[in-house]
Length: 247
Ligand code: BGC
Image 1 (cartoon, protein in one colour):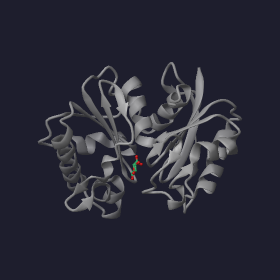
Image 2 (image 1 turned 120 degrees about the vertical axis):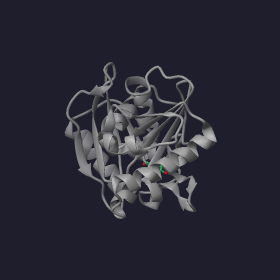
Image 3 (image 1 turned 135 degrees about the vertical axis):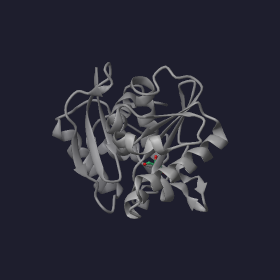
């Protein structure tokens, strides 16, 4: 069965029909640039453009880079503050005229990785962490998601951790891989101190360059592996959520 997935990110809004048996895109994805400011109305227009590019009609899963409870977007660290307390499920559902499921972007990527990627079959405490514009976190206990964990906003060295260790921080401060890996290491060590996970899965666009920084990370007990679905994990996880929407 195919279901449509859309991933709303800090730089792009991308989507495609997803083959849920294979956990892979059924067609090459379509991407539009995220508008600035990323207001609910403008982002909804982009989502509409991505979905209509495929002439899709059917359920649509959509990720959002903030807390989402019951289809309502609750925080907006890296998008327009106008998203706070918006009924995104209703807004996007009306715009598309289709049934819509909305969930946190890291949670979506995590669900996809735990089923089709680096976390498949893994028990115990597992984290998927996405490094991009912000840091997203998805926590799994024996394969079950604990949604909206928001560990990108832990305090690290007196800073919001994502301001210090996201790939945006790497770019903005022009950090070397070595320097950035050191910050990521400190961050992982902090999460490990709090949760003692067995496994960290490192996602986000930077997972494509895992060989540049994962070998530089030392002193973390948990296993650390790159995500396998890489930048499609959000789209796949969004479609999976739409196929089995939470109440
Ligand atoms: C948001 C999270 C999101 C992460 C990655 C953070 O700033 O608070 O909800 O998962 O960025 O986009």
